[in-house]
Structure formats: structure tokens, C-alpha cells
Image 1 (cartoon, helix red, strand yellow):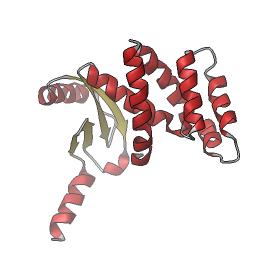
Image 2 (cartoon, one colour):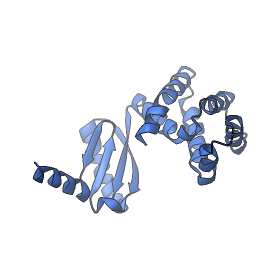
Image 3 (spheres, one colour):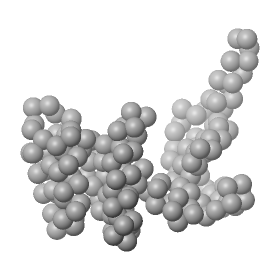
Image 4 (cartoon, helix red, strand yellow):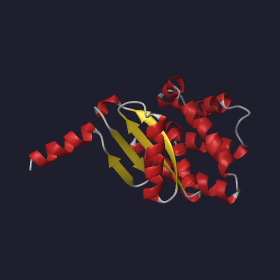
Length: 178
């Protein structure tokens, strides 16, 4: 994922700058969300990763699936990504674009990974605590990872709070090995 983020960042920045200049941030965000969902589909992902399929066919596939839902600028963006072999990075491009948009809107998207599904009460408590700590509007993106063994990991911009049992065990092991 880190490699995909590195690849996606310049494309997301260029798309963001263009959308901001045209005052179409929300439209670009919506279209990128659609493209990310398309590229994240297992069947599409397999085609995009297949070196035997040429780049024009890959962009054609994505554009055909999204037919009628993309602006001409976004269609050109898809073709640019295809020409550079970067279509698999569409989900990461969308994530980076959304982060840039949120920053502009003085909003942070906090990724919350928990051992179990976060309850509404827990979400509310997390939102309040993060709003107070970050001093801006916070949106939660919650997911589940049972390998945490318990607890939660929160990522909001540069802030990472690892309150997971796995994280605590890793820190304990590191301290014991000194």
C-alpha cells in the first residue's frame, strides 16, 4: 500500500489542482470514488494487473464500465493513468485526493481499525476526542482487523494512535529485547 501511495500522490495532486482551479472538487471526488470502486473489483483488478492486456484495452474496460458517469477531463485522466501503467493505483489516487480535499475543507478523515466493529457510542466518543485533539471537523472511516487481538488503531493525517493489543505486545517485546 505504501508503494501505491507513493505512485498515487502526484496524480492525486495534479487532479486536485485542476479540480480546485475549475471549482469542481466534489465532482472529481465523486468520479474518482466511482473509478476507485471499479478498479477495486476483483475481476477488474485481475485485468489491470495482467501484463498480456495492453494499456488501451485496460483504459477501455474502465471507461466502458463507467460509461456516462465521467466528465471528459476524467476520461482523459483515466487514459493518462493507463498510458503510464498506473490504473491499479486508482483507489490510492482517490484516497489521496480525498485527503487533499478534506485538508482544504479543514476536515480530517480518520481511519479507525478496530478488533471488532465500532459501536455508535464508541464512534461518538472517538469523534469528540479527535475533534478536540485536532481542532477541526473529523470524519471516521472504520474497518475491522481481527489480527489486532483487541483495541484500536487510529490514523488521522500524521497522527497515529496505536491502542491495539498487538501494538502493545510489539512495544513490550521491543523493550524486553534492549
